[in-house]
Image (tube, rainbow, N blue to C red; front, side, top):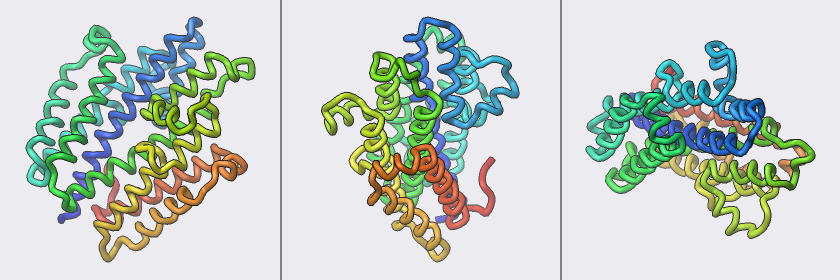
Amino acid sequence: MLSRVASNLYWMSRYVERAENTARVLDVTWRMSLLVKEPRLQDQEWFAPLNITGTLFPFSGRHSTVCAREVLHFMALDPENPSSIHSCARQARDNARAVRGAITSEMWEVLNTTWLEMQQMTEERMNARGISAFFDWVKERSHLFRGVTFGTMRRDDAYSFTRLGTHIERADSTARILDVKYHVLLPSVTDVGGAVDYYQWSAVLRSVSAFEAYRKVYRDVITPIRLAELLILRDDVPRSLHFCMRQVSDTLDLVRNDRSPECLRLAGQVLSRLRYGRIQDIFAQGLHEYLTAYLDSMQELSVEVQRSFFAPTLPP
């Protein structure tokens, strides 16, 4: 397979996953802000999605205040923001168009239709439809794309690079959500154990579709250490770091070449820390420090994937 084709497939799936993850974070933030009555505290909730996606600095350069309307427009509909849902839909479609022969017609139809509908979306139409309804639509389009990919694509290198992009992007997003919750959204001492505390922790689980999984595994009240264990070390939760890295490592093994030994070593190193890690040791080290090191490792792995399989320069 040409490296250009592999790169387009990889980034196509990363942009689809990024759009869904952004929609998840914004939807949970929107719902949580509705529980807060004081306007000042409502606005504070909207720092979270900016921190999670690493876009606080570019946002601050264009907007003077952090509030629901400004953040929603910036992260959902702003074509000038390369991480917005609008931009991700466009870039996913552009990458798919470049490799029409490597994907199925059903995959192309999903991405093309999504982009055509996204082009018609305005702030007024999003509000008329309903904020949460719009985010549900984004998630459903992503689910449809993955379902069509799984159900129609031949299990060859093209399929492998598509799945590789999905799981690298997903692992990065889960780690960011966890990190921000612990170090930006922690409630005050008076809220610990109360209704606000419960909804904050449940919001994290819902943002990664793991609320039901938590209930089935622990059958008890939501606690920080169990939540972290579920989303970091469990290998049976589709959005946990362990599950995603196992998928990444297995996929890299399928597409390995003469230039990829270092890439496989890095993936195996990260996976082994997750496979044999203990949540007590992670908390003793410091969750923020652990997740920061993990994100650094994922960035190093992403660069190595680029070097091993694709063009020598990263996309903008």
